[in-house]
Image 1: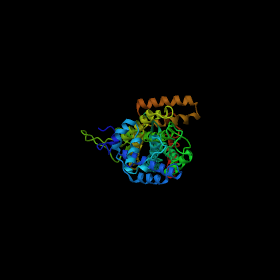
Image 2 (image 1 turned 30 degrees about the vertical axis):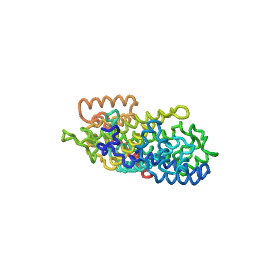
Image 3 (image 1 turned 30 degrees about the horizontal axis):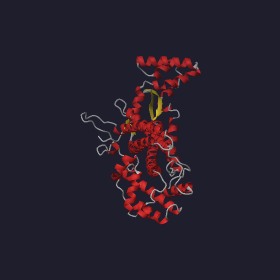
Image 4 (image 1 turned 90 degrees about the horizontal axis):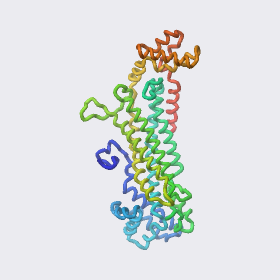
Length: 441
């Protein structure tokens, strides 16, 4: 088994990550850093910080040259960062020392690495947007179709009152929809460029470092933060928070699917299930299990990542390295979860007969709350609760149906209290409201 299942050929179909995987490859990181170095040189040439002819040569070379990440490994191991080796290789490959001497002029490694990370995370957010949008739209359609489909709500694993399957679907989708809205806020705010030099003071970045930073941000289509953020990891932590929320929303959906498809309940059907190596009858809910596992991983990774907010002084290697170890698998967790969740949302279906059978087998006990409130017109609320509780205990002990026991004591009680379809409360409206919101994304 590989150290990360995301990198495994064996488990590639269990944890697919699609286009997201390439954004966290060594090649993608090196390419992004070269783009930042080239854009920086071009901006510095325009500001007469370095010779314009050298800036043009560096910028052109940054787009054309290929650097093997493996060739940077030894120096990266010594230095703790890859940029010194990258700059040395870049200068050598240019074969123009008169121009290459101006590469990385006045910047620091963190400027290049953080800016390059933002370039890749911007693409990652676009991938999330696409997957989350498709998933919530599919959930919205499912909720709308089954807004009035009665099922037993369960609290603490026990039958509670009737709800609708559409409302249950809305319960899965609402947190994901909220995360999508926050994701779009992140995209609208823009991701920040980093350019502030060795200790955040921009000492060697020319006479107007602020203008240079703004120019670099524009060139890379990033946001100018207006300050140094070397030790302020808020830009990364904001993304991590949204990613984790989305993962846990999908994980909750997975948990409910595991329960709803288990033997003895089987109220939902999946279009695909896994088999056992020894039990031919097994239909294992693999995709929901993956959603739960990915959510658990995301929670753990995010807990570690949030600690990187405690950067020491102006720069902190330990905090930064922790970020490198946790952010990529956290991001890939959501990418993989969305692939599974979209398919589930588009293909899962309720077994309405099983849902009805569950309601029918409950002896009318899901109407206990409604009955207790109906009785408050003739007795106090505490007395009504006590009377219904006694009646429920009798039905459980002797069999029968709560409706029949109630009508025997109070013949004028509305029998409609025991019709689940008439006791859905706000469930249909909530399902339709969620569906309407999904149509707007």
